[in-house]
Length: 471
Image 1 (cartoon, one colour):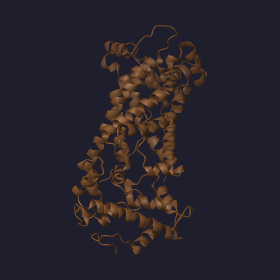
Image 2 (image 1 turned 135 degrees about the vertical axis):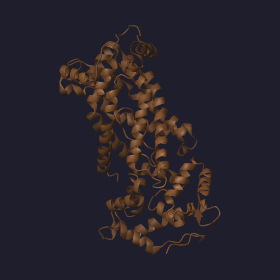
Image 3 (image 1 turned 90 degrees about the horizontal axis):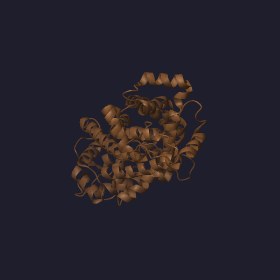
């Protein structure tokens, strides 16, 4: 039997560890491979299992680097892991009662400078509390963190519970979820970024006709020139055939890799600037860091945004491709043309990021409160739905700025001519001629692509992630 939680020192339970090993060793060959480990962790942790967790456990446990964990290696890893969990548990159990309640857990987080809400603490206690006593004993604490290589600090514990998901819906790529130190060391972070970029390529290509239609409606539709979804598609097909539906998609796809890479690394740097301990970011700090990362990535890849718009609006034969379009625009309009519309683009990051984050947190917390008697862990599909809804709300708020950006990008001006429209004059003219409705031209195809983009992104991401060995 396991030790009593009142005992001052941790004592391992060889029989329990042996049962756990046999439970994981499905084929009974006396060793655990990565697939057996991943399946076991998914059973134990459910919605809390995060990609790459199995690889990290294997790296720590596979001492002889043969790709498997023998029984002896498993015993050593499990014993070391549970010893660390025991030390954390005893530090939280201030009154040495053998169990931890919400007030003790909240106090422990505060002493370590980890920012948590009372709701998070209550839900975390509920997730561990198997016997429904509103307190967590050592056995429950150990089972919750079973074979999770984190859990050795208060920050690890809350991050394990907070695990979220981010998905690219083909408009504004979101900041990737914060990677743990273990994921950075093991290399899981870049594999997940590659899988995310690959999913973005497939999803954006699949929804490119709707994206091109959106750009065309933003630039060409007005009160006088009425263009709808059906008539817009007919115009594109009549002018250039089926192939023309994908104009501009090349630039849209090419910018995914540098955009996501710059945003990720800029986010890492921004966290250090906005918070003395970047591991303890609150919602406000995440918003500021995310906005800074968005500004950095958007500025860096903005010429590709302009090229995407110009190629989407081009007539048949106008440009031979991406490089030719860039050359023609530079020769006729100069370097400045590649940054036309940058200011409204950067300005739109603030309402988008703020509303996206606020709506996501609100929806997730609403779900947790509504289902507080059922589960303390939102599943992947719930988080995916919250992310889709929040991103959609963010796009809705920043859409007028997106529309102005696209209109400015589309304006071709010869070298030496007057500067033409700016953000304010263009917004004023659109509102005067078309009213509020004019600020949301192209919104219909933009929303039409959300559902297929999310579905395709998620399916492709999961398959690419597994193909890259992130299980």
